[in-house]
Amino acid sequence: MTLDKQTIQKLAAYLEEAEMHAHDVTKITDDYPQLDSEDAYAIQAAIRDIKAARGTRVAGLKAGLTSRAKMKQMGVDVPIFGLLFDYMSVPNGGEVKTSELIHPKVESEIAFVLKKPLKGPGCHVGTVLAATDFVLPAVEIIDSRYRNFRFDLNSVIADNTSSSRFVVGDVAQNVEGLDLRTLGIVMEKNGEIVAMAAGAAVLGHPAEALAQMANHYGARGEEVPAGAYIMSGGATAAVAVQAGDAIHVRFQHLGAIGFRFV
Ligand code: 0L1
Ligand code: MG
Image (cartoon, rainbow, N blue to C red; front, top):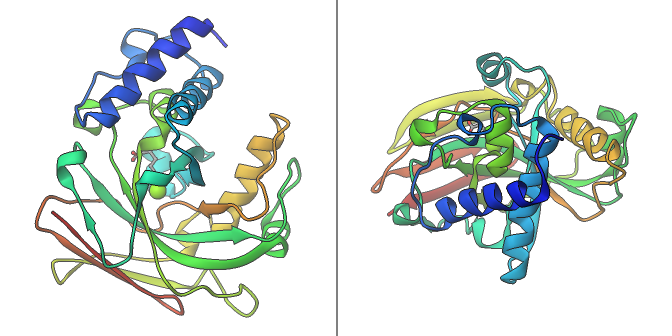
């Protein structure tokens, strides 16, 4: 850690205010280049506390930067982890208000709900599958608070990994007999295919993202609790959207998700 408590609070308030008022800001490492990943996760936790004081609750967890392409772009080989809040949930078939967002992008993901807690270190794909109650299709709407979506790793961790909105599909499946690596996803914007993927695009297996998440929390003496809703990270590329766009995503074995930007 390089920052004191007061600076952590100040930077959390700066990013949280940008999110709530949908305006972009300069990245925090411009002013604090020494900021490390522990500072960044502390800022993210301080954002959670600001929201909790207002009655906002954590609705789930997410892994980000889970595709090789995004990792290469950021020069990292481990994913990052963020929080999903109650007001971020958009119903399947619903609408997302672009006036509440800065420059949204959509990415398709496989989500997990756990029946047992996951406690690292030592979690792997097998541990995760044994602890999984069911999987669901999901779409994440990411919206960096940083100008032009430009950031470095620690800035984006602090900015709660660009969490903004998420849509959960209606088809829950047991993982037994389901090969999440080969599960196909086709994403359409306004009736045109804009991205395609298989589950293996996420770290070779989407459950690997949860294993790394559990190991990350485990190193901090925390666990991923039973019942948690967890998004494993974008399998498809993130596609920019604007008001008027309609998104439709088909997931093999898991049904479809559709919603609009207004
Ligand atoms: O969910 C994600 O993979 C986003 C992580 C943060 C990077 C970005 O905003 O693209
Ligand atoms: Mg994501």
